[in-house]
Length: 168
Image 1 (cartoon, rainbow, N blue to C red):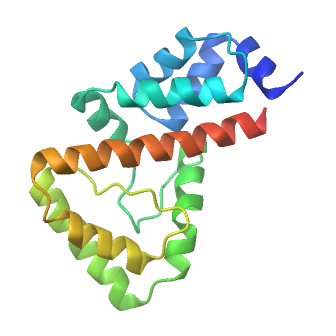
Image 2: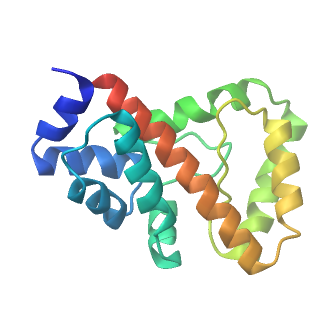
Image 3: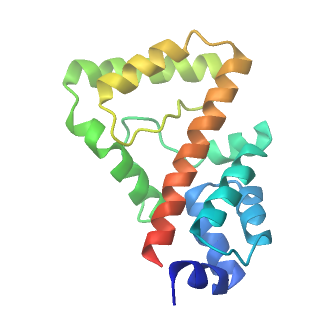
């Protein structure tokens, strides 16, 4: 069976759990589930992308709730925690103490300003790059930052969905 055939054949509850590990917004997973069966991998990815773009701000905040602060090690043994650790691992290895401390301060300032964790697609980025992005985004107004957060969450969910598909 191909990955797409397996994806289409998985019991809804089992697939829902895997999708929630990608993005902790149930409506995102429900949107993907509603599209089954898919003809190919590209159709699954397109459905996920469309579902992510359709999320309300409240659903995005729900998705954010499952993400640790950048620079903090995700706790637990869940698939989502393991993915988070992997996504931030290169950045963690690339940081010196000064950068780590500056990132903690930027996270705190960001949370005070916007009321939620600083979210960034961290894969392949150093902590210095992440710190620069956090500082830059602190200058955003609420509407601009919400758009950035939605895009970062969409990219993270897409990467994680690709991992689910690769594992099938």
